[in-house]
Length: 254
Image (cartoon, rainbow, N blue to C red):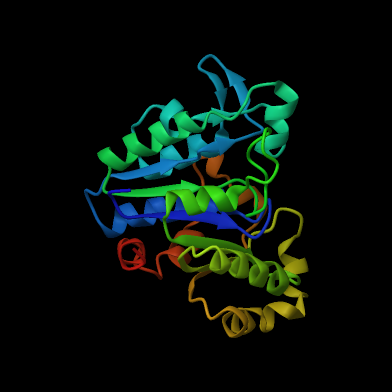
């Protein structure tokens, strides 16, 4: 890859990767005016049928917040309707994952942008090829070679999930740019989060256990206000993400 970039992954599904990826794209453009920020969702499932074909709402949100003008088929080259792991969706639909299309998209985005943000699907061990059950998101990260931003929850259980994610990336030789602790959880209310005593210690212990820098701690927001697919991300999230200078995060980790 020619231009600096980051791969945004998560400790599991629903942790808020798209919210954080969109916020990073938006903040990066504010921090470096005039920069062309490319975005890519190489593999997407749970897509909806539109006139243009299967469309990933995550890809639409990424394109909006990055002001990325590439065609949606470039931003999201492999799409499936079933809301399943790509490998499972490929097996069910009988449409194999087109990794050559992924490579073409990454090449086009790399050549036409100053920064590139790539968002994964689920966690590291999600299978991505119906013909090879051992091929996972971790293999995709290693192949692309970008430093990794890990989006993790703020709640109880995050120490285990985050430590395992960091360990797998390290064993594979992938560079880790840092952690984003995301307080937004779709299945909990703000009052539930306030009663979770682990949040008083999780931040410190994530650093103790992994040695990985924390790039941002994103506050919990009411789920109804966090709607990247509708072009809405609260300023509280943007401000939290802006505590890191993302052009340097992408460049220094190279």
